[in-house]
Image (cartoon, rainbow, N blue to C red):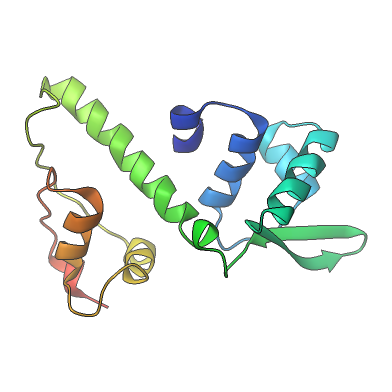
Length: 155
């Protein structure tokens, strides 16, 4: 179970959105989505059609008789799905840390955040030209986190 389903429940639509949020650059076929989610063929196609009509997904390449789908790069919701997945994951981690350490919700939480190259790339799309990565993370995540990572100012 990923962060989307932990937060929003396990409906078929949420599970499909979670697959795309965890694979934001991938072209996925309906059979791949069925395998990843356990959702029936009929429901996968119904949900894919709904997400297409809403502009969240677009059709990508066709391999044989099989269409592939991907997040719509021109849709603000789609462009930020992977980012939302990251925020939800961080929120779940923060909750677990608070529970393990006995830190109340009304007290600040300090953690060290280490970013890999993919995370920095995703963050750079959200970054304003005049702000540092540290300021960006503070703006996006709120002031409850103390950011302490030397690699934050790398492009």
